[in-house]
Amino acid sequence: QVQLVESGGGLVQAGGSLRLSCAPSGSIFSINAMAWFRQAPGKQRELVAIIRSSGSTYYADSVKGRFTISRDNAKNTLFLQMNSLKPEDTAVYYCAADKLNYPAGASYDYWGQGTQVTVSS
Image (cartoon, rainbow, N blue to C red; front, side, top):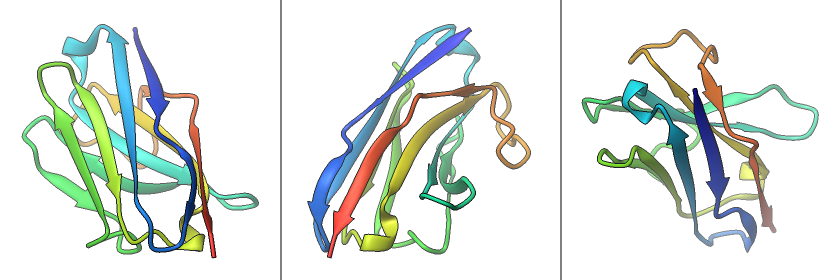
């Protein structure tokens, strides 16, 4: 089993930056893909970015060029650097991890509890 704990959320003005972290514990050797998802009020959970064990990444078009996903492979700690934040980035951000490198959609094995990011205009 793997437990994921996010941190780093908060309130920031539009144009500002935040850095989210996700610290795993447990059977971290089993983790391959790690990702950030977000869910805004009244909306479905959406994928923000993925990073695989190879280091390859994927970004949603809405965050490309503004967000950077990274990973400390030794500890499997996951980060999301968010720059040029917009009010529409406001959401609960979730860390997710999977034993596969290409999990289908949002079918990740492990999820964190989420951290709130609020961007004021």
